[in-house]
Image (cartoon, rainbow, N blue to C red; front, side, top):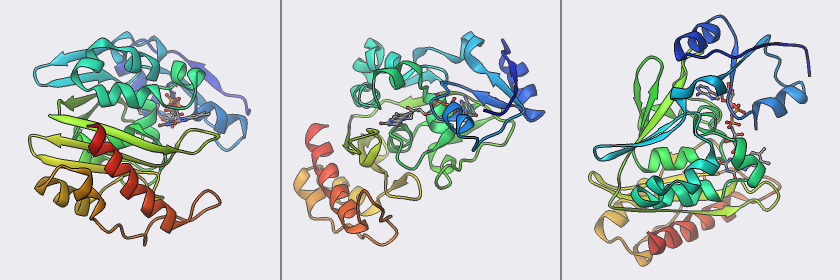
Length: 261
Ligand SMILES: Cc1cc2nc3c(=O)[nH]c(=O)nc-3n(C[C@H](O)[C@H](O)[C@H](O)COP(=O)(O)OP(=O)(O)OC[C@H]3O[C@@H](n4cnc5c(N)ncnc54)[C@H](O)[C@@H]3O)c2cc1C
């Protein structure tokens, strides 16, 4: 690693001030520290969010579940409140990476990073959640702008994410066997505003699949999902899977998610 200054602010305002002066915020470090070790990232200052108590925690707020940005994947997976309100979210968190990654990785870090194969962005988009930041509230549909890119400004922190409770929902992923990231992951939710389907692992970041949403709005059945032809153009081909294989996985994961929801 290159040398850096380490700060540990205790308020969101102080963390935002540090970010505005060029510091990089540190959450679970599962991506950021690895990229620093590889010298792909070279922040002059790290602002560790770990001492800001109000950033972690899970609470029910009316018809929504609000989860703090610094809440670890393991805490989401094991939370009775999450298991009761949105079991699909607890199930997703429990299948991220391995035990060590789940013990350190955070909801906010995952969503801010917006890795194109990450799981949580598909839950945020699939449930039509709202990202709460140090400056404003951003609807999921306006938040994800393509791989590793979000609507966050340089000095803007995610403070929490508010998930409206769905009627039912499920997430299915076909794991990349080494990392357990999603080769393809599909989050399906029946919400008050209709069915939402979010796909991760396709290449250029998480996206909604209108064809699947239309079909599942008419009939929320695996057969209806199976009848939708998935276009492979725009999906990535790499050493792990061709675009055609990924397109088939979207269909299969969608069918399984509907069956599970
Ligand atoms: C071996 C391995 C396997 C993994 N498997 C999976 C998997 O199966 N599914 C999956 O979804 N993910 C997986 N991950 C990713 C992991 O779960 C973390 O979610 C991810 O690495 C980022 O979260 P973090 O809390 O560690 O963030 P960090 O690495 O600390 O930060 C990541 C980025 O987000 C920024 N950031 C962090 N918090 C905030 C905030 N509150 N506001 C604004 N910006 C912020 C940081 O500045 C940095 O740019 C895996 C990671 C590893 C190392």
